[in-house]
Each structure stands twice: as C-alpha cells, then as structure tokens.
Image (tube, rainbow, N blue to C red; front, side, top):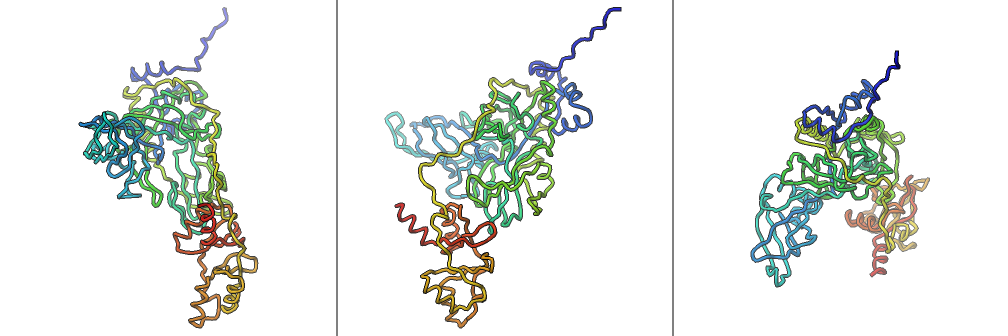
Length: 507
C-alpha cells in the first residue's frame, strides 16, 4: 500500500473569503464576549475553525469628538470669521462656510449645561438649530453677518470627525485631597472615598486586536449607529504601552442619537458620548487567541487626580474584572468604583454590528495602512517657567491647641503674620487661626485657642502649581493655605500676599 497523504490543513483565511461568506449568509459571527466563552468551553483551534468575525464595542465620553459641516453659500455670500450655533461657539477652520463643531465647546448662555456634544446630538435628531455668524467683509464676500435656522438636511456635509476615540485603556481615578474635585473623570470625593473608570475592557476594540493586524486606515467600523471608517491613529496614540487611540470619520446624517449623546460633567464641561464598534476578522489562530482576552487579563493604573500635575502618582494596578465588580482595593483601603462609560451600550453595539454582518449589510475592509506600534506620547514643551507652591511658601508660625488666645496674639505681633497654624506633637496639622479670629475672640472675652480655631482647613502640597493654590483660596474666600506632606505634617504656608507678590513681579 502506498503512503496515505493527508491534505494540509489551512490555518489562515482572508478578508475576501470572509466577505464572500457574508454575501452568502454563511459567515459565523460572535460578539467579543461570546468568543471568550467559546474559547473557554473548547479551544483556540476550535474557535478559529468555527468563527469568521468577532464584533467589539465601546460607548463612552469622547471629548476629542466633533463634526465638520458645510453650510453652503448665502446670498450675498459671507466669509465667516466667527460663528455660533445654539449659542455654542463654532470653529471656522478654513474656507468661507466650512465649520467644525467641537464637542467640548460650551454655550455662552448655558455654560456647563449645553455644548457642542449636545448640538451634534440635536442635529442628528433632525432638530432645527440657530446659526449666527459675523464676518469682516470682502469684495467677493461682502456680507458682514447672518442669522438663520438650519437642520441637518440643510447642510451639504455633516461628518462626525473624531481625532481621538476608542481608548485602549483608561486610568482609574481617585482623589487624595481633603476636598471634592470635579474632573473629566467625574466627581471625585475626598480622601479616596470613591473611584471612577472608563472603557469596556474585554469588549474594547483595541484590546481584541492590540497589534493592529486588522485595524488600520480604511477599516470599516460601527460609528454612532452608522458605518464609518478609521482614518488613522488617534492623537496621543501610544500602542507600545497599550494606550492606543483611533481617529475616525462617518456620515452623521445617517447616525442615530441612540449612539451619539451630548453630556455634561459637573463643574468640568460638556462632551459627547460616542458609540464605536470594530469588527475583528479572525484571519489566523493568533487573532482567535487575542479576541479571547478576559477582563482579568486587562490592567490599568489607579491614579491620584488630586495631584494637579502631569505625572500624577500611580497608586496601584487593577484589572477590569475588579473595576466591573464595583470595588477596588488600594493598599488596605477598599474603594467603591463606578464606570463613566456604559457596558450595556457597548454590548448593544457589538450585538448590532454582529446583526449587520449576518444580514449582509456590513462588509469588512482590509486596512490600506497599519497603525503605528512605536509612537511615544510626548508632553508639551514649555519655555515659560511654571511656579509651584514650594517656590513661594514661607515658614509657618505654629502653635499648640492648648495655648491661650493672648499668647497667640503676642505671637502674631512679634512674628508679623496673619495666620498661625495649629499642630500636634508630631507636627501634623490640626487647625488654623487668623489675626481676625484672635481679635474677635479677645473682644468676646474668649481665652482658649481650642474654642476659636478653624479645624476644617484647606491645604496645599509643595509640588502643586501655584495657580491651583491661588484658585482654591479664591473659591473658598480664604487668604492662606498650610502646606503639608502626605502624612499631613506642616511644611510651610502660602498666602494670598505671596501669590500677589509673584504675579506682580511677572507683570
């Protein structure tokens, strides 16, 4: 008998082959969550044989979003210099009637409540919006101003154009300060009493193809409830540290307000929630393995947003499984955590994209160019020196809680200061008293410092930008901040006079 020859098993497939199966209605499509379950119950090899496409999804606040619109020419024509739509300032980036609506631009009459993200949503909904524009007038564009009402149907082009979207991972945010802060990561309570995060974890497109084998320029995607395209890497893209981003574009006239929603972050500003999904063609077993990644394998940093510096402290690493559980542990502290993005909507996007492919209304495209894997995100070059609290703070005059008011009064006079900081035996902050407090106490016949000092004290850290300390004093109508370290030991004090002197030297 001759030797039995087995036909070599094919271990790759092409996008063209998958599209042919989509046309016939034979393509096997799973969402990213379904793919992970299949791999767990069988194997990578079985999953590769059975699955043609894995769909992903994410739905979160994308501040780097916006829309390009073309208004058409008025009669007589106008070369727009400044423009507003529903009182939101709209950027005029180029030609006479081309405009860009930035998601974070805020209304001049409804600041923090309505902005570019809401404006885009209203246009997508088909609502009528008001346009106001001014110009300086030229021979060929003689008009100086215009006011009109428009809907998306009146626009020649209305394209969603997001220059940073689809974050691969995002920090988990906490706040170590003694006061609540308001950030693009939402409201962060003092003393790390809560944490917030964003991202879909194992459903996230860039976590399912981290080497960009199938994701690149020209990849067709789900964007805002319609079909869109990846047009390049997003700004701040840094793939080698798994902090990739995407730049995307799609026809907003075809999009759905279900997947594009304007939003406001309290005391921070406005944004746009964007639904994005990317199909991952399973071209080889390697991609089958990558799309099997689970939340417990995806980690991000817990970052202290209470430190207003670029290099904020990284306090811990946590997995998306921990984040989605509702609580994380940092050191010996258990912290409740909540998501700023919607896992429910991410699942709906992955499911909708799956349905489109199964119905033969969505076909895959091969990227014409892969996204870079070696880029590094650089900080801004600064040629002007930044002042920090440590540059201007003075030595603090201190006292003990047990001292008498008269003794404190004498110290204020002898040291020529307006603030005395109360500390314990270890030098840790317990309160503050001002010259006004002492004057009032003596007029009222009070003798004990413990009866008059302020115990809820606003503070600063030495490496904090002076601008932030100045803003805190103005917000709380106070004239000084004790400067402390992480153990609350008093290092010095910064006063409004110190800030004024520095600003006076600058001007």
